[in-house]
Length: 459
Image 1 (cartoon, rainbow, N blue to C red):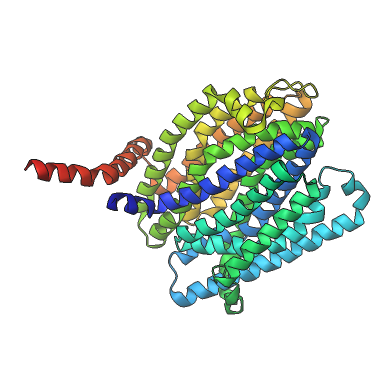
Image 2: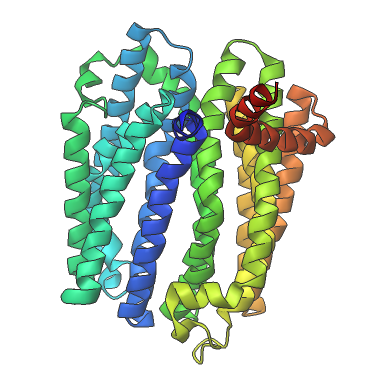
């Protein structure tokens, strides 16, 4: 029992639990909405979520990564100033984005209202204001490695919205606008709790200084681009498909395999959330050896895990599509002529490449090389966009859009390892040996005490 209690309090476990809550409830809600709306309406919902995710990468990319890195080596006075600067810059960016979107919606109302993005321009400015405090709370808590509190926020936000979806599916059918309003209410409640508990750092906004503002902004000018680029790597496919002749139906189809890749990203996000503060702290302290070992361990452990997950996804692709979205997405779509199952299998290969690509980016940011990471992401985005345009407008194939994801990720891995090797002098073999060591250590945590007791009994 003591071993179990120790395990559930471990950083990776708590981080994984938080992301697991979001992913499970998110995928379950996604499945219910896909079944309850027509493909066209569901496509509009996907565009609303995609547009919001893209803008939030800019909004929070300015300060979030920098805040985590610099808080890892800050004293209490500096910590308060940094948290205050994060809140101040986040508020300014939110108001600016909201103003731009409202102005566009007002000036180009007829054009926007007839497009698939009318929900985004209408409601996202409100959502941006309402979700700011709880998003600030998550980054402050991550920097302090308070994963239990992060779990509370994630469970509340995801749980409440899932209840709304359940009500919509089983008891009272809602329109698209009503579901969005429900999302706004949930975000407001989550942010209110974060502010009442003092987790979001808004109370420190007056402590922000010119120096800490500059510190976060100087680091953020690179990480903002990196995060926007990372989001584009996920959302560019959807955005370009939505602008093509394929329309909302193809967006809805392509969203199914994209959602399934989120299952693979649960452990990836969880491990990265714990790896980055540790690697940053080691880098700030000048401990290059520790940074290198952490990179080996996390890259190797995730790679082994993803081999099993990708194999499972490839073999059981049909069942996963059926479970997630129902039979209407299982057959070849008559409007587009594409089979979602084939795209899922291509994405299972793509999943194998994610761990090392993501960890090279984390490694570069942790050693204070966000500019190099930005270059890496820029090249990947360019390759992705070119690949998407060729796949969609030349070959008219959603399957080749998925293949393009494999190509740009291979490019990213090569560039990331090349630049990181210059700083850390990497041994590629150590990635796999340290990955095995990670699981041996985890196994010893669970079984070591029991074995010790058995040995004592024998003696």
